[in-house]
Amino acid sequence: TQLLEQSPQFLSIQEGENLTVYCNSSSVFSSLQWYRQEPGEGPVLLVTVVTGGEVKKLKRLTFQFGDARKDSSLHITAAQPGDTGLYLCAGTNTNAGKSTFGDGTTLTVKP
Amino acid sequence: GAVVSQHPSWVICKSGTSVKIECRSLDFQATTMFWYRQFPKQSLMLMATSNEGSKATYEQGVEKDKFLINHASLTLSTLTVTSAHPEDSSFYICSARDSYTDTQYFGPGTRLTVL
View 1 (cartoon, each protein chain N blue to C red):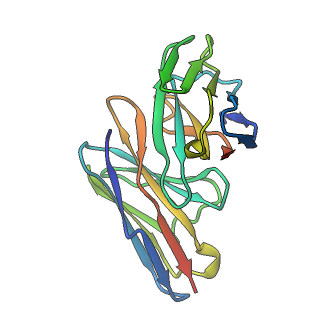
View 2 (cartoon, helix red, strand yellow):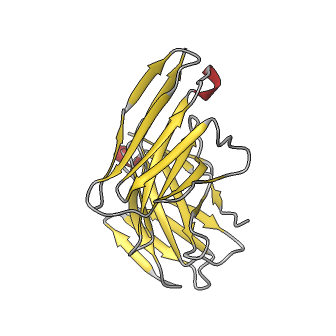
């Protein structure tokens, strides 16, 4: 069974601060996705990373896939209250037919 | 991005009744869809993998006779909660996998409350 450990589980910061969320596994994934979910809604895809060492930027969000494709990080610069939500990472292997989700990081950005 | 719809968005039912939830991929075909259950402030718990034209694959501990899944077309999967009880109250989310990118796109979820 593939496991994804996501940390921290909860994070509460002030507006303007930076933060990093980590997603680690002992397994190799074909690709890794990051999602953001607001209460009462389904997760929304933020990014997919495929290549080891890949870095993708989405405005103030920077996503990195580890060289060995076992881990990933999400860095948010100058967090805003609108960034508040549950962030989920998911590792996918084509052969497995399904994705493995981390436990999620609940981020609260206070104005 | 790809769109997945879910219906209904919320439902309240009496204990003992059955509830059907629909999941549709609106702009792509999905041979594989997934059904999740989520408790407040927790991650997604995979219940079953729905494969078009074949039987669903259930995760350990999920009763297949209670949570009936039908994936009759490339754009529609349904989850029926049979003889619902208050402990079945939860947020149910479906996702559809784009076979070209291997990416899952999620529906907006269905809030089930069993009285």
